[in-house]
Image 1 (tube, rainbow, N blue to C red):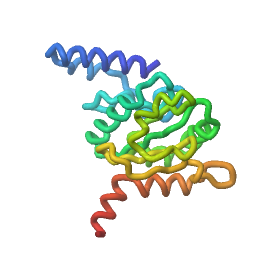
Image 2 (spheres, helix red, strand yellow):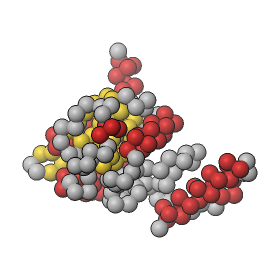
Image 3 (tube, rainbow, N blue to C red):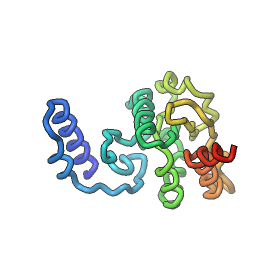
Length: 194
């Protein structure tokens, strides 16, 4: 419910800005929304950070425009200096639900992900509706699948997420190592060494 209020406030702020009026009262009156991770059935995290109209996409929704979601993530990544993870999957995918549960239980790893990446859920289904948006990247090796993008949208790495499992479940060490390896901070550290 809070996220709906946040969206309504965001829309009214956008309308005020486009009309040239000050949006300060609407922004200051916005309720505090916790940055907690929820299931992919809901919007995760804050509705939008201060100074941003970006709304995170954490639900595999076949009705969404994947290309528009990716473009919005690129704008947000450029604004924040984060990289992008395209989380390719579907609500039909058991491993995707296990990944959701993993991040629910592994709060520290969720914080690492959210501090370094703009994460966008991209629905992948038999209708191949998202194929044009995903055609810019390498082949999806299986579902779920992560594409790590630089903040300009260029592909850095393609990760079949099942490789991050050990003993039938997602391995916290492997997932954290993956996130740390591809975080912007790791890239900056590597550049300083070279």
